[in-house]
Amino acid sequence: MNTKEVNSANIPLIISDGCCVHFGSSPALESVNFSINRGKKVAVVGPNGGGKSTLFNALAGLIPLTEGSLTIEGSTPEEAKGKVSYVPQKDLINWNFPLSVKQVVEMGITTKKLSSLRNRKQVNDKIKKALKDVGLEEKINNNIKSLSGGQLQRVLIARALAQDSEILLLDEAFSAVDIGAQEDIMQLINSINLDGKTILIATHDVNNLEEKFDEVLCLNTHCCAYGDPSEVLTPEVIKEMYGSHSELFNNKSHFKTEGNNSND
Amino acid sequence: MIELILDPLKYDFMIRSLVTAFASGAMLSILGPFAINRNMGFMADAIAHATLPIIAVGVFLGFSISELGVPAAILIAIFLGLIIKNTNIGEDTAIGIIFSSFFALGFVLISLLEVTINLEDLLFGQILAVSTSDVYIVISLLLIVLVVVIVYFKQLLFYSFDPIGAEVKGLNTTFLNYLFLILLSIAIVGSLQTVGVILVLSMLIIPAAAAKLVTDTFVTSIKVSIFFGVISSITGLYLSYFLNLPSGPSMSLVATGIFVLSFIFNKVSKKGSLATVTIS
Image (cartoon, rainbow over all chains, first blue to last red; front, top):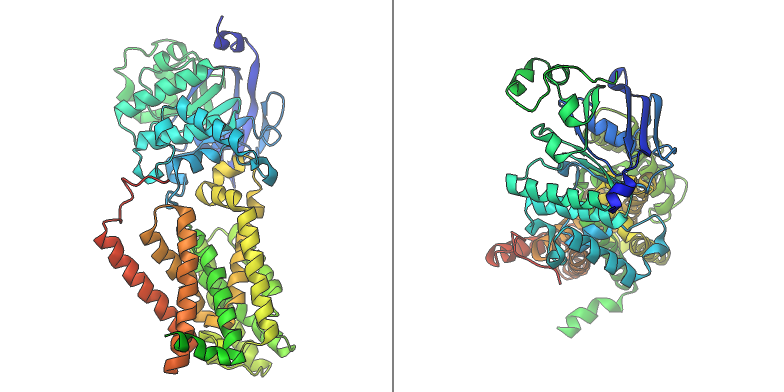
């Protein structure tokens, strides 16, 4: 029995119970219910403005809930800080800074306690291990400006690994990278997942989700469906998420043709 | 050559000015690389202009500009931070409103309180008038900026590079935001007598921009920025002494000259792209 099988036991790690987030009078998330077990690899899909990033921000403790509850191992996201690593969308990062790969990964170990960085050897070992895990060990001293989009994404994932948290949130991890790099990132995510980490990835790519992910969370402000991708990605759910654009997905043979497993 | 360098040192006011120029140049250049990479030039300009009402009231009450430095800087930083955070009109717009309205308020207060301030000195600096206590204050401010940046370097860098990631990691990003604003305000207010309200931005931005053109790493760019900043302020002061030029503008022009040379060096050595550079 491997690590994943042990950790994939039905132990809810993240529970959303009627989670609502409003920005002023505009709802970003409305009564979202789901329960994610430990060790799962979950795709979070939905249209722009559907609440994917808002959910990640709430899970990361960056924004408060308006109503309902969102817990990580029974704690609020604010209390659970440190258990969650967040790889934000790349355009939210200030790439002006001429930093080395090592400096970026070291941020995953940086804490508010100033003394925590005194043990240089321990810190360097953690950085090297994280970079080895993402296959960028030899790039440790490179300037981040010399890296491709896919490599930058892997550096940010290495930073999250160095943090050594249980949950990894990746917002638009596959955007602005070519197909080869997407494949590399997916393989990397699979190997991280095998180590027992729970991974949530916001993505616009709804192709072959059942091959890549254990579960899919379909969001369009509310939760349209949550569960096994091969079961919940029905035409009705697709229509609920994408409205008139759902016809773009009609020819996808893997979508189930009956039933709607919406949690709402 | 040595005689030329030593000649101004026979005057006490020149020794005071040189030490102040060194401290101001270094203090601004330490923060410059953070400021330019965070696109905070306009913010820095607003801080400089927002000091005018405080200077007017302070001088009216009998304080010097340097003596007002720390309290003024903290007030300005907190005020700017609060306004930007609590308005939804956009950061640039909020800064623009503060910038112009405080500058206007400063002039109105100078007129109303009948404060005796030489406006040209205030706008462009008058380093030759610094007192011994001013020198001690500016050196103290330099030490504060230097020590705080060294102690909080990794946290400030993380916050500047990825504020969301830093917050998720549990860093106190509100504290780091205000800390940097306070440091920036301290450096700006502490340098007003050296280069004045208008030109202080040049000594913050230009050495850092020149350093960015000739270096590959952030840490190196800070070191080179400090070097360029100190060279600009000291050389500018010497030019001012020998050629009877205004000191603040002379420093600013020397910094501009260094920037032009760095720009040419960058183009000639094809270092504009860091694509193939590795950091040792």
